[in-house]
Image (cartoon, rainbow, N blue to C red; front, side):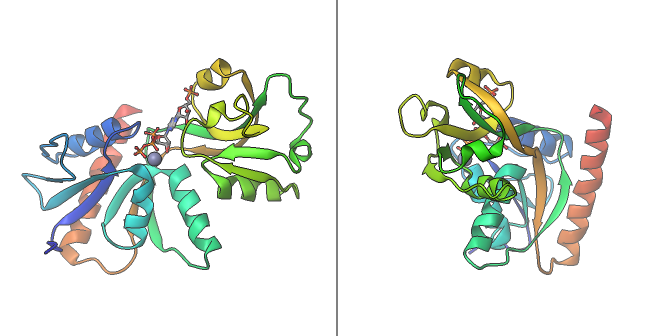
Length: 225
Ligand code: PRT
Ligand code: ZN
């Protein structure tokens, strides 16, 4: 049986956000013993449980109220929201704050010799991406429609493999695009990690703990600036 009295926080198990998420919680004074293989870790000094999952699962866990708090990239969050809206749902959650890590941008990139003269050039092309909804929303501003090649990894090899004309993927240094003979042609979304809370009623104790954590996070981030 799940213990509902403890604050449940979801973070990425292993990946680009996991070290920083772990560090942030530690700097807030939460003592956790994260054993590598464990899905759940229990804080020793506060009524908090840490759930360690794939980043893609975090928005849904918060929106569905399975966990109280989530640390996730805005890119993954926004894509999940758009996906649910496309299915006729109205996903509810509270955006608590933006964090100071996980910075990246979602960009459209094309083979180096592609003659790019603005979004209209993309009409009817096939675009490989993990973020079809963010891409569709952006290109709809230009009345551009496209064909999707949905990939959850190795997006950058799609043009060379003949799977797509261009790609829409996350970029930070640009080295991956460069190594794959691609150039960035359009930035469609700027992202950072963020902290979200489920909607609905929280017990006074849980809400007080969230408020305390938020104050500490504010202090940690300010000290790093
Ligand atoms: O296993 P799980 O599903 O949890 O992890 P994942 O593999 O889906 O995600 P992960 O760990 O790669 O990224 C988690 C989050 O980190 C993303 O959702 C973003 O919010 C953020 N982030 C920040 C990035 C990057 N920077 C980033 N550079 N996510 C991915 N990348 C990838 C990008 O997809 C491309 O393959 O890095 C490559 C490009 O990097 P550069 O530096 O070569 O431009
Ligand atoms: Zn993922």
